[in-house]
Length: 336
Image (cartoon, rainbow, N blue to C red; front, side):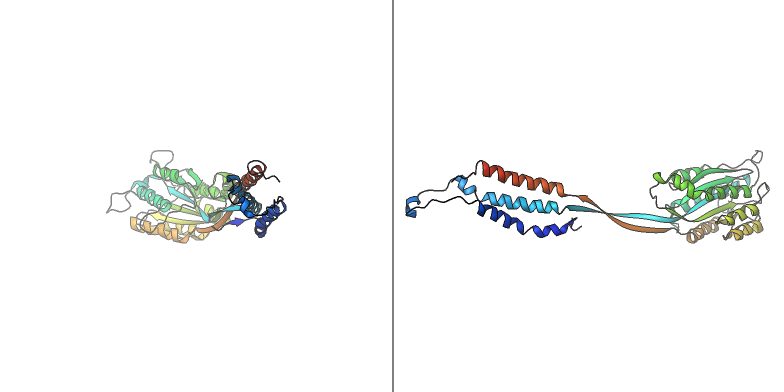
């Protein structure tokens, strides 16, 4: 980066430094002695002190030059590029009913929940099949059986989130959590998204990017069943999402055990989309479609901060002027 001066106009005084030094020497000239013939002093050789006398105006000139540079306040520019993002706040809402333990694709020995877990992680972290990852987004996780629970609130540091996705446990048919409460899962996720700005503001001091702005709010609903717990019905929860500006991407998983009409209605109510995934490849395509539809905008801004550098110049100038003063008063002192 080019040198920077806070008061560069002071550099116009630089030509005055040698002039001031010359005037000082000229005004300080000592009287001379006259001889009738130069031959009388031909054998006289100048002492080492006499030889060093020209150093005094040099020291004064150099000191004045450095002092002028110091007064101009040289500064070191430090360039920095900051990246900010207008990202999305996204909640995965995952069905953990026992039916998710069935195989998604008869050709592969993988269960529906295992495929959902893996593709959720790849959506967040990226893969070599077109998913770039979502490092700049707020992402959380809600699961539901008969009851809905927040497994992970909205976070921008996703390492722990991936582990929590892997830890999802299905609700056993004989447990109190057996059931499919789609509406409750949506409502809980919507409540989290509604308060996303306030949660972000509370954690602003800890955020790597305090200028992050939420561009859109999204729920990705993944279920293979029909709603059979209706304390909060799915259509009611969808209307709440529409009121709060939250879109739902509803994904029906498996061989048609889900209520396609209900999922389509939920998505349309909120301005989202509904898709059906009968195999792993189709579900992979759906994740990539959502990734394309919900883009994060990255903004780069270049900042330059300046660090003052005048102290070394001031010290150097002071040392030279002090040396000139001491030498002229001691070793190189001249007397009439």
